Length: 245
Image: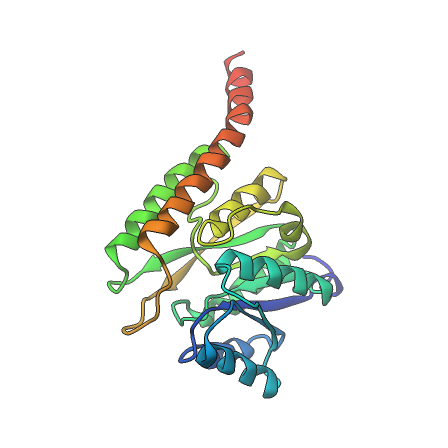
């Protein structure tokens, strides 16, 4: 186990147009850790006011982006801010209530035990999960297995994970929307960051707000995996040549 003085975690929550859920999610995670960073990704007035209320009530450190740049852009800003504040690790959780907050202690403990690792959630879906999301995840897992040369990352899209902050800030992914989650995981693996996969329950609340853009987000995801595979190919060829000797 690492020295606890070296482990200073926070909760990182990107939010865009979640005025009905963000307050409840922050209160829920604060039962386990009261160091919370919320990045509002250019929400309209209701979402912005909901985020501002968290700061007014002293429930979170809140930063507002001037315009919507995507989930990845919000996480990039949030990880930089966490680094500036001196946090060693950041537990990412979505603002829409999909993730099981009771798993926060288990993920933080896994990170405390393996502070050098990226802790990734592997979703256990219930019947509320849209079929399209399941298919998108299967496709992304296929490409990530090629990019890493094996079944290293069980699920690259789950937004419930713990980053070692310094390493995450250093890799600089180019995808700033839904492609960020798989790209940052693959790039961290390429730098030698160990991957730990943990099961976690994921549900899709009735009436929940989704910002997944079926066409454009799939275009970004395809372009992200094209870039990653092209960069991974020389590594894979070298590995295959060595195995063949």
